[in-house]
Every structure is written in C-alpha cells, then in structure tokens.
Amino acid sequence: MARRPEITMRVVEETTSAEASRRPGIPVIPEKPLLDPGIGSHPPLRFGGKAQHDAAVHNVQAAEAALNAANKTVAMFEAEVELNQAALNQASIDLEHTKITAPVDGTVIARRMDVGQTVAASFQAPTIFEIAQDLTKMQVDTNVAESDVGRVK
Image (tube, rainbow, N blue to C red; front, side, top):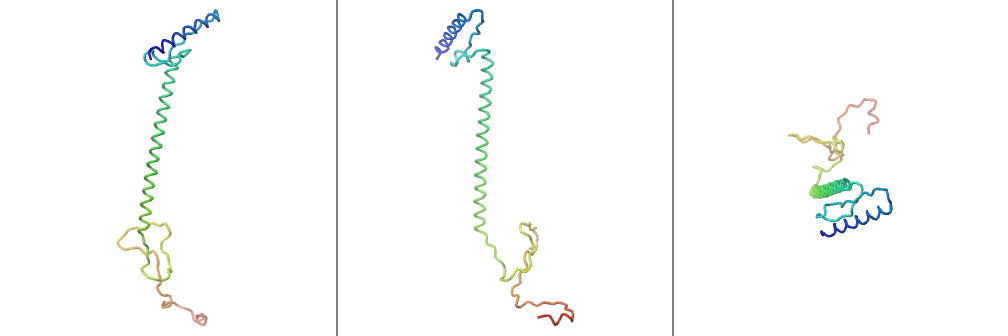
C-alpha cells in the first residue's frame, strides 16, 4: 500500500516533465496526491487539490448524513404503520365483541340524537330514540273542532 503513492508521484513527475517539454514557456502546475501517502492512494488532483478534497469529503459526509436521516425517517414511518395496524386490529376485535340491541320490539317514532353526535356522560342515560311498542294499542288525546269530527276516521 505504501508503494502506490510513490508510483503515483513518479507518474506525475514524468507527466509534468513531458508536458513542460511539449509546451515551452507555459508553466506546469504539478499534481498533488489526494490524501497523505500513508493513508491510501487516490488519483492526484490538479489546481488546489486540498481544497477540492476537503470539499468532496464534506459533500460525502453531508450525503451520508442525509442518507442516515432518510433511513431513520423510513424506520419511523414503518413503526407508525405497525402502530396503526395494531390499532386497526384492536378496533376490529372491539367491533366483533359489540352487540347493539333495542330494549323492546317496536317502531322508532323519534330520534333525539344525530349521527356522530357526542353523548355526555351523566347519572341518567339520555333518550336517543323513542320507540312505540304496539301502534294498534296507542291512545291519542287531542282536541278536535266540532266541524272536523265528521272527517275523523
């Protein structure tokens, strides 16, 4: 591993001298290794390699942080899906155990609550429906004018 940076430096020196002989009078900027020779070998950079390297390292670190954040967001939403699935399963079980029955047989003649309306808890249960048990046995007390009595059936 230590030989690779030396080879890279030798190739850079040969390339630099070859370019100088081809273009007399034009200064050649020598290439520098991307990292220190003891760390690893990367292709050499031209024109301010250290600054470019530092910028690239920061870009990679930012991308890794963004990837990590995205993975944590995915894990959070997967956990939320599992939580909602458990709530749905519990609601299904509650629905299976629910049975609503009327206290008597009969006909609903009045509804005192609307669908979705909240019922307040109190000591006395509220009246939700009025149910007539047998309409054939119903007695009606009313005042009828004498002129209308002839039309009553």
